[in-house]
Amino acid sequence: MAEGWAKKYLGDEWEVKSAGLEAHGLNPNAVKAMKEVDIDITNQTSDVIDPQILNNADLVVTLCGHADEHCPMTPPHVRREHWGFDDPAKAEGTEEEKWAVFQRVRDQISDRIKTFAETGK
Image (cartoon, rainbow, N blue to C red; front, side, top):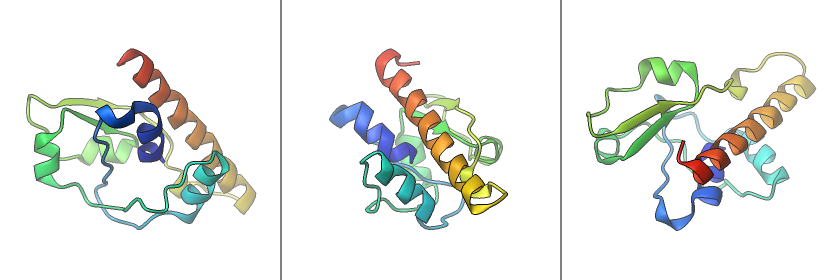
């Protein structure tokens, strides 16, 4: 979801890539949540962090606590930030409750990336 928002708010001046510690495939609820706000992420992929991309990055942002704790070391020239969000894929409860978590986290990520696009912080 973050990649979809980043591409929307940051525009062509940023090369946006998303990756994780493991590749799980696109979560259908993430696709559905983004479709609700007219952002199509069906062509995105679930990739494992590539050390070469990591070393060439200007900014690395982790979104979940597990990623923040286990992300490979970044070189000193790479700005690294952690923007903590709940991992909606790990939500528990009824299907309605899990869906509500996807919607909430989607909106929180949108707000955070929009703020970054406007302020650089």
